[in-house]
Amino acid sequence: MALEVGTGKYRLGPRLSVLTNALSASNVLLSASAQPLRQLAEATGATVLISICCPMNNGYFVASCGLAKSSLMFTPQLGVMYPLTFGDLGRRFVDVLEKNTEQPTVSSLNSFVHSGQSDIGYLSELEFPQPLFVVMKQLANGLLAAISVHSVDGDSSSISEHIEGQVMRFADEVAVRVAAGVAEVAKRMPSIELQDVKSTSSRLERLLLLGCSCPNGVSNTVGLNDLLLCNAATGKRLIQSGIQTGIVKSIDSFLYPGPKLYQWAAKIGYRENIADLTRPTVSDLVQETGETIAILSYDEVTRRAEFLDVIQGWRPIQYQLSIHTDVPLYAGAAGKAVLAYCDAETVNSIELVKITDATITSRQELQDELRAIHKRGWATGNGERVMGAFGLAVPYFADGKIRGSISATIPQYRKDDRDLPRLTQLMLEASAKIERLLSLGITL
Image (cartoon, rainbow, N blue to C red; front, side, top):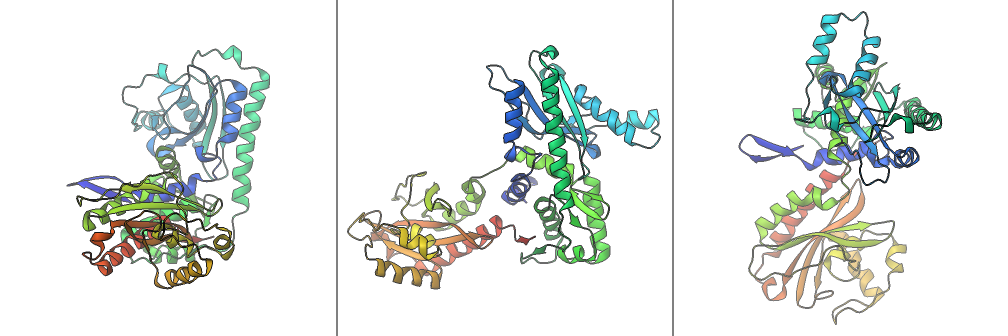
């Protein structure tokens, strides 16, 4: 979840990004699926926000933002925690919270409002324009959300009844979609396939995994303790801690992702580039081997592969590989390591064009080699795509699906000096780490 960057210092780890990606992927409240929000912004000619209240932090944050095309725009940073004392939007949240609190006292409410934690620094309310129109929604998953329209000039006269109606309909659609998801929650418990030891960190990861992968809720029953690798008492304490920190929210014997998870997802953003996530693992491999390692990504829909990143080794003579260009699946170790795990239709659809004298152009020869690669789990290439280069590649998967490969490209004159079995083992270990990183490991 975190990477150590110095003694006692840590930064966000790639695994948390993988989990929050799962929450963002199809969630109506987050920017990864914000096309309707952008359309509403264009219709209103203003900035439209979805903000979520985070009571345990006495604050709120912007989860998603739709922008209209303009030379001067209001573009708040997603996931930043604003105190409930900040801006008219914060005060709107306070009004709703006060109404939902049983007989609040003035002193307790003041304490509630003024103890907010935030990370806005010296940001002035003038830089966060007051909303021209706001719709507050208490959602079926327990979140309190606001859909608001903001304009830099603050001219509320531009908000017509027609635009107000559009915003209200959008807010109703958001609430309906959330309620529909909650209503369709499967009665059976999901299963987690990750092979974990019983530890505090693995239990926390599993709680985060359930929250991010089950946005419509998961039943808080006895079976949940088994998924969390703990007994009933430990499970109860873990879930209670999750509720107190806002990681999860409990409603009617169901657990939902809490506002803190949504804040993390908004602040981290949807990270599609596998290279960003896998770079720490691959960098370690480069440091240990000294060889140039490339990260190849495969799209099974388009049947295209490309190098997303190439990390140069520390040995004096190295190949320079281009990134973001198509890599043939039939020529070279990196492509063949992927093709060996593709379906027959994909393999047969490839035109075997000669790139170098060593390129395989016989379909039978290619089929035989792919079977051997599939059996042993790694591929080699000798000048098939780059003259004079020897390649060694290992595929990586995510939730059982082929996603790409990591490959070492070595000058052929140095191949005999390498301990290739040792290099292969190191690459297989790195591939296993990448698979563990990218796989959610949950079946709903």
